Length: 121
Image 1 (tube, rainbow, N blue to C red):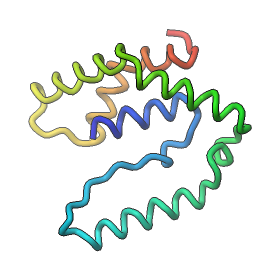
Image 2: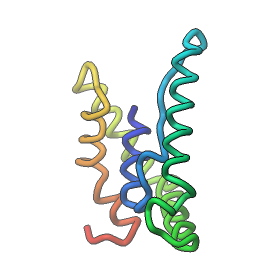
Image 3: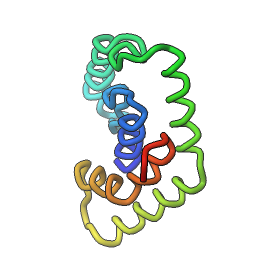
Image 4: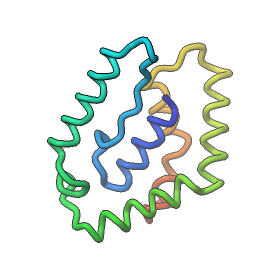
């Protein structure tokens, strides 16, 4: 759940449609759920088209933005900050849903994420 919120925020900052990433849980006993999740995600990606098409980005610009995103999520600063956010959430909130996690990522990590893409802090 936390990784989902983080990746969506990074993709948003990179100008890549958030729908291109979807992390959901399905146990081995949930074959019909797994099939539905994969089918729905595949259909979403088909509708969006090749990476950059739905975003209106040239292939070279997509490469630059994806590299910035990769550098960011590989950075120790972001990884430590994200770890601290998840620890704090576990202590404060008994049950965290996607919306709460997205709000916490936005509140605690937005400046770090924006700075990696050259936005003003």
